[in-house]
Image 1 (cartoon, helix red, strand yellow):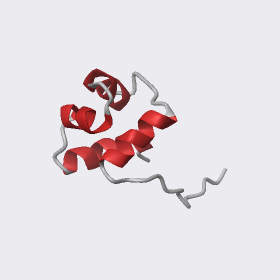
Image 2: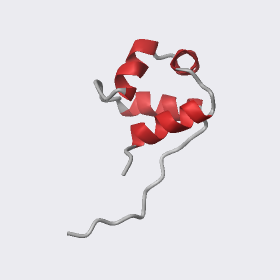
Image 3: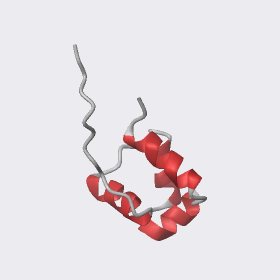
Image 4: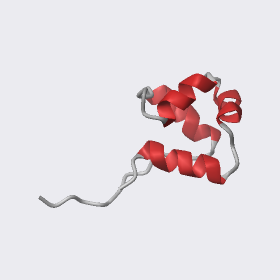
Length: 68
């Protein structure tokens, strides 16, 4: 199962938005976005919200339940 960052990267790339352009849209630095996308840095809620807003996305709760 893909995590939120994997899903975000897939959508960002699918829309043709570069990390540099995402940085411009969010006010974050491009190296920070690269670290987040490569899972070398955990984004704050504020950072994640900026990234989602830049692509007009929002968090949605998954109804998938784990059994075990």
